Length: 180
Image 1 (cartoon, rainbow, N blue to C red):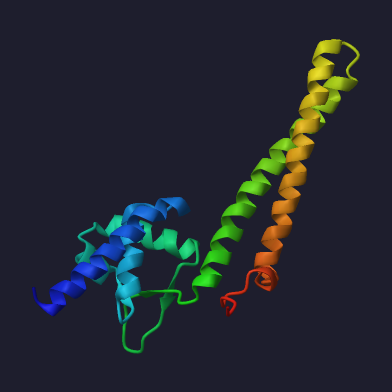
Image 2: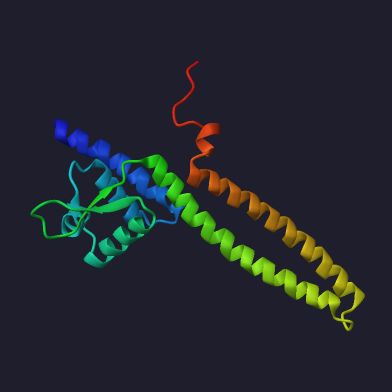
């Protein structure tokens, strides 16, 4: 086997692993393969170059790039003399991790918190209604307690996300391993 074939096989193994694990991030395997391709590329690539390399349709490629851009995992770069858009991965993996989780977690926390806060108000109105049965009133009070506990949890998650954004988390989990 030639050296360049061994190199290509090794890279392919990593790209396949990245593609399979990208679903943890809500990213399709094709976007994962794209990320892997950009990871090993020694230069920024155009959509056409990525499409040709991966054998994907232009629409699929565009969607995959947009997903990775939205998550701050890739970036558009400018190269003198090049008319087409070029893309490369963001090299700061730590920042990519922070960006991804702050984007995803904040969205989920906000959506869930709004629904729970509205539900608490509705349950409080149900409890205050004199026509509500004691049984229903009791169940509503239990639900309010459960929802409030979950809102407390979301408050904790919000503060955790704040520590990612400010990088205070690195005081507790430094990037560099401690020397033994």
